[in-house]
Length: 217
Image (tube, rainbow, N blue to C red; front, top):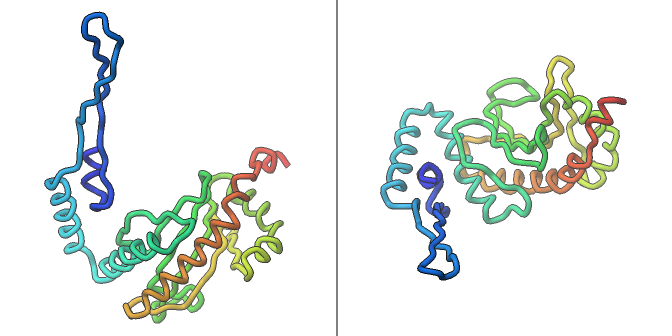
């Protein structure tokens, strides 16, 4: 609990309660609650200090990524309907739950362009990632529903299933210039819109997949 209070921001507070059972004489047993852990200014100060130290040790690219995701989380908390963004980290991706192990949503802010395979342009992507030993089987089952999935989304997806990798994915892609901070609100809005749409269309589908039956087939 102390650790959670240290790593989360001031909007979240974690309390630990210890329950005792008390009896006075022949009275009925009654519960007594003792607060054994609560947030405090010291833990918040430690959290902010650690963040400052970490940020000072990052490369320019990592600092840009951390700043991008920090502001993205702020935007998503106010505007997203379905997705639950995680704590920002200095990396080019942010994973989010999709309701089943082995299936995730990913927001991606890449400092390279996957089409030209260069660093001369950037891109943002909203992805459904499948990994684990049954990823290929699940991908095939979802690909069989491709026309219906894309009809529900209202647009086409990129379907990516490399034969030499265990993981596979379906995604939306948008060219970007991540160094232009004035454009970030546009990218945040696009990511939230696409991630919410992917969650809406895929969440129940992946929960309904009978992977054991599909594997036997």
